[in-house]
Length: 90
Image (cartoon, rainbow, N blue to C red; front, side, top):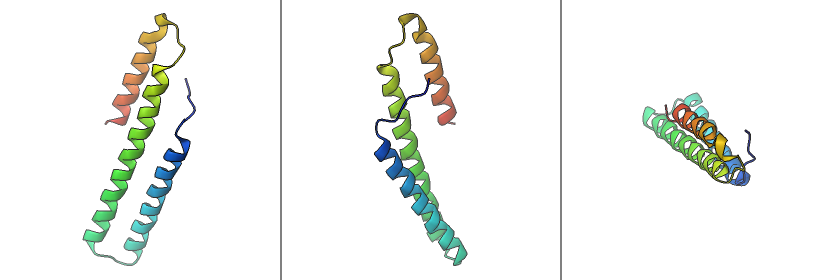
């Protein structure tokens, strides 16, 4: 079941931050920057991506908490959520 993001502006801000960091990394590579500069930028991108993942997972969990699914289907919703967590946390 698809759910709309309630924190769309927050998610988009994180995506834009990741884009800016990726562009800075591209520029550093193109200019032959020191490895420490590139590694620092890669770590920043990884952190921003982790924050984005956390935000979207949080939205998904909240959507499942308030989902108007009949009680007999809760086990299916829980299995879907567990699968999603396993995929994201690999």
